[in-house]
Amino acid sequence: MFIVHITYLKIISKSFLDKYNYIIIDKNGDSMSDVAERLLQDKRFLKGVAAEPAKDPNLQLLILESVIKNVATKDDIRELKEEIRENRRYTDVRVSDLDKRIESLDKRFDSLDKRIDSLDKRISLLQWIVLLGFSVFSVILSILTFMISTLVFR
Picture 1 (cartoon, helix red, strand yellow):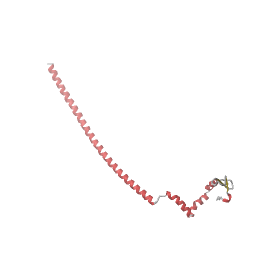
Picture 2 (cartoon, one colour):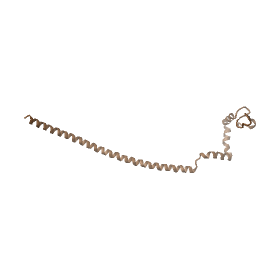
Picture 3 (tube, one colour):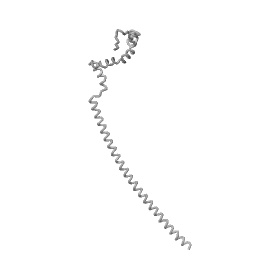
Picture 4 (tube, helix red, strand yellow):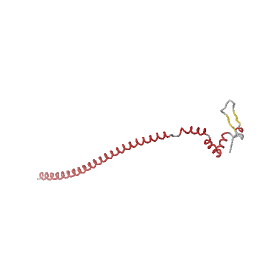
């Protein structure tokens, strides 16, 4: 295990008055970021650090206080469930309304289909009547023409 003792560290400071601007260097000349990087790569060190909160109640409390903000309580879950139920009821009502509107539209389309069929039948009947009317008219016109021509040329 890699252990850094304070006795092996020396502090190099730009100024004694400037307490925030310092560099920590170990006896080999490595900076603390290098030391930290080596520690983070050491699996035994990481296991030890991970196991430490289980031993110390103060660390457990500190971790819980920092994490508790992101945890949902039973009341939060109850509120969410109730909100989901309300949304579901609202959605069910809306879907029911939409179903009724769709049924109404279906009935209107059916009514329009019937009216169109009725108009189609009327148009067909009117076509036959017009055809028959023109036929009768042409026969009458032919008879009149024949009669007029016989009277005129007599």
